[in-house]
Image (cartoon, rainbow, N blue to C red; front, side):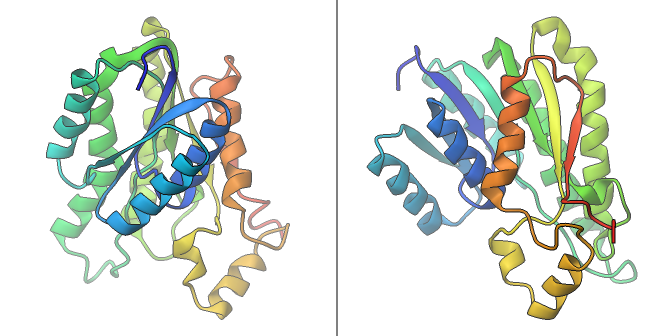
Length: 244
């Protein structure tokens, strides 16, 4: 790695939305640092695919449910004297247990991954983000409307949206912008495993009649990074959900 390059850190960067954002940032000349939780096989497949195109990628196995992963990421940046231009806080999880059956440890784990981890990771690596840098959180449409299944997911993503707006006060004096993207239903690996009937029901609620392509969604992240007047915004990209 060379310090005269542009660097982007993406948590949860080897699958789904994170992977799509990694692809578009790589095409714009960013060297990538991608974190992932446990799927070594998929992570190395992504690394190999980028390397085949001559792209610079570093993988960090850093599970966002573990507070120790913050040290792992921060120590890597310190050891390599790396400064970041973009930070995408994308790693997330959910708990789909019913309200009656939900356990405290499962509720706490969703908050750890979706809220606590990105906040304290950002706090730890703030000095490693260049002036003029951009931070983008992955929120969710389900942070704006009630989630039909996961209470913890909806509440934590609502917290993420609030974080974006509140962090402006703390990051603006350092010359760092912070925004978020709130996707609707995106055609990631997770969504593709849903039964056809459930997918069809969702598509019927979207005015455009389909799930969002991850590569199309990634363009919203790029817009927030490249347009220097976006700050404190959470962009909803849901294809007109509930408009029919």
